[in-house]
Image (cartoon, rainbow, N blue to C red):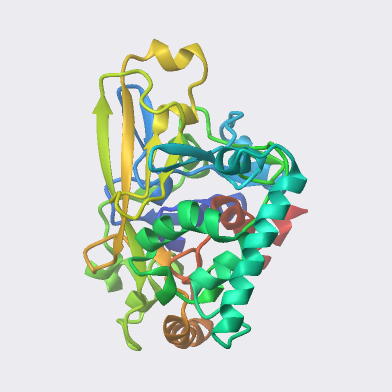
Length: 381
């Protein structure tokens, strides 16, 4: 008889949530991760009394009350509201695109005025395409201008998108931007979800709560001693790269990745907001995160004399880098579908999460997906 019911490869949110529900069913799990800490990309490091999101900003948001109540049962979430700002040539614009954005860009005050300008610019984009003899957008640039017009595209989308993808917008497929929401209200709340916030004390508290009483091991590379790890449990939940699991049989899947440059500054308040995007192509980083604004408000910001910022640089992914964003183009999707076919034939191996499914997920959908697994149906009753 094997020691564990489940070997869970990867201590990110999917693996940790799975381990929790398995334990509720009386199952024993071993959770391993090749990194030196648990939590995957939601891991926080405390620097100068600030919970720093080491692998990029994570803001939990959902309209599913069951999911919200579930995560709050481990750690209370605060009232943080995501209201990012875009910096273009030193001018600041509110995101998402709303009446504050339009007022700053055009000096207008009413929704009707904003719509008139946007509609006029959208029509100009349509006429330009007609002159070229086309009726459907050929690339991201044309698609974006059909959705929001020239000004918003040029100042707030073009440079940022080209930095993110490392390619000109005219070289990117139109489907990358299917819609660009425009809000005709003075509302800077980025998400439409009913619930949003950050765990008070950081995401490590959520991970610790999910894994309480469960065996874990860090600095543990599944592929360095695969046979030994697989011998530990009856079944395997694999949350890593699905192409690596199958030894790249059909080739490697591609990603974009992010490099983080963390700095501790001798000032209590560097930029006055948690997230500021830099939308000029010539600015090398895509955004600056000031972490204390996720959890500290009002006077609390100034009670701590230092702050920590992170500059984010979007780059092409290589083997020694962390894979972040799947490139879901036709070529990569075709390769993934071959791996998915193999995965469906596995009797004792399950696959889940961003890397195993080659799909970008926010946090709440990950939790919801695990909660809704048929395996855990009894836990939902």
